[in-house]
Length: 382
View 1: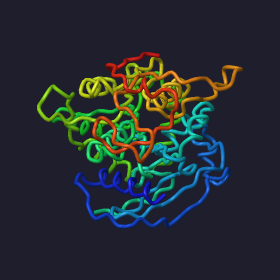
View 2 (view 1 turned 60 degrees about the vertical axis):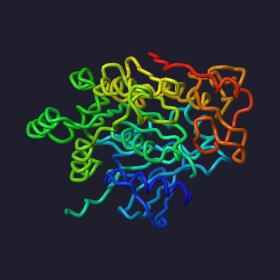
View 3 (view 1 turned 135 degrees about the vertical axis):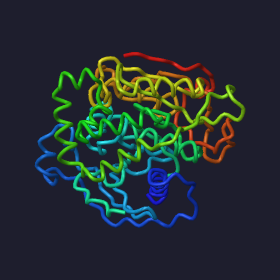
View 4 (view 1 turned 90 degrees about the horizontal axis):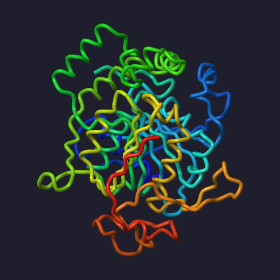
């Protein structure tokens, strides 16, 4: 738990100030409480996107040099497997962003093999007070602003990240035109409506779907508006990730770990994700464009995203067999969506992998040869 807390602390520092951190202090857990049914607010219990399905989740407030950070953890370390760490988008928190996805039945079949840690951006959790004015490795799942934070974390600390699922990522900073448009939008629209235009497609907003109405209510009621404005301003002040596909420029900087890019068809972030795909190493990148999923595919299409995530994990050598509730035969053998370039070692004591990174634990038994093969980026529409 201390090791995982250390990684969370590093993530917090990246969000609050863009500097390389050193001399981090030991973390201290100051609060722990199980997420029991009936303990959340009445508003949360009335919404399917916020309800919990079990009592295994535990909340923690972690003290870091950058302030308190709220995290929610389920499970315990599973051998040599990495933790799954998530980071939500602007206007959301871990419940609004990920509950529909992680509560999906097939997804629970996957996550029981891992310890899962949801990180709430500072001040964005339900019931957060207003800011005063003035594990060894992880598999990251980030959406929007969370995807940007996790990608930057992986660029600075590549040996700490086993793989990344980046939804709706925009690798570029805001230009002057974007800055002016954001300022104008802030003058003519409320903050929740501005954030909704970042989260949902124009079609969803025009149709004012039930999902949009629900999220407008939740963002207005459960997220501290002052803190949200700070988070929104910070995200719009981000810098370019400055990544380039290997071989295109000298000393190109890119993500070294396996990456799955996800975006909904006609989503606001579609252009940014397509550009990010063009800048990543095609030998370890999967690009998934999901039809009829809108701006939040993890909410509208959790089944399809779960299937893609399962193949992504299997391609990395984890959970070679999973029960498929649609088949009567029980467990089915793995069939990876993409064969990744990075081979894994047989144990933590063996030699480093071929890309020069740290030794990695290999949890599979039958797909070692396939994992060493190199394929180009796979773009999948579903």
